[in-house]
Image 1 (cartoon, rainbow, N blue to C red):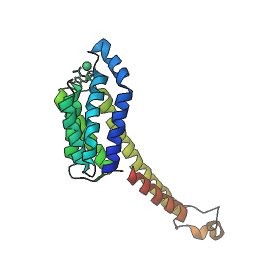
Image 2: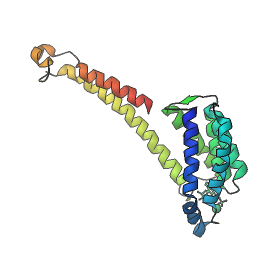
Image 3: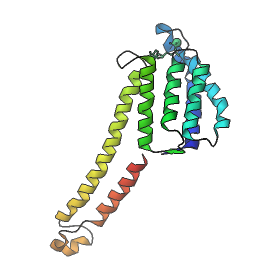
Image 4: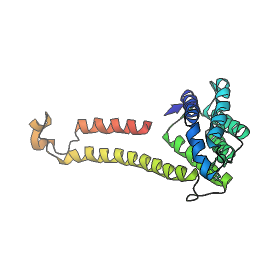
Length: 200
Ligand code: ADP
Ligand code: MG
């Protein structure tokens, strides 16, 4: 799914996004806060950007831990320690890993969300970042399960072709004698989906 190089690219892209949305995030923080959220995030990720060259070739755990420590030390607001703990704990979850798959990603996100809950002594329905984090994590886990269910359904469908008399292709020439035989195309498709679902 992603190797260390990809993770560095993603972190750099997050930094660019924070810079691009700096004013909007700060505006949002005006009526209900102290007008600094965008400034905080952009400052933190600008400091992260400065660390990226040294992180080239490092494992994912080290990259994420460094991002977290940098956010903690450069962002004054509540978001610094909160995102900082999230990235640091995410880094611990992926310590020494050069690559991550979807399962690693989901357990990393789980750890990150728990870190924010603990550090912020907060839960959903309190109007914080957790109201974006918790439901999105649940949906991503559901998608993972849906993909796995999709693969199982493909194999069940392929298996079901044994009970069918083919009316298309060469298999239609053998008629009823085809009963009990699994369709090759339904089988190759099931393998295809299995591989694709394993990648995401
Ligand atoms: P500050 O509130 O110190 O100025 P920021 O403006 O950078 O820090 O960040 C504010 C955001 O931090 C809020 O919009 C909210 O999403 C999040 N936040 C604040 N306190 C908590 C908490 N205890 N738990 C979770 N998230 C929090
Ligand atoms: Mg603020």
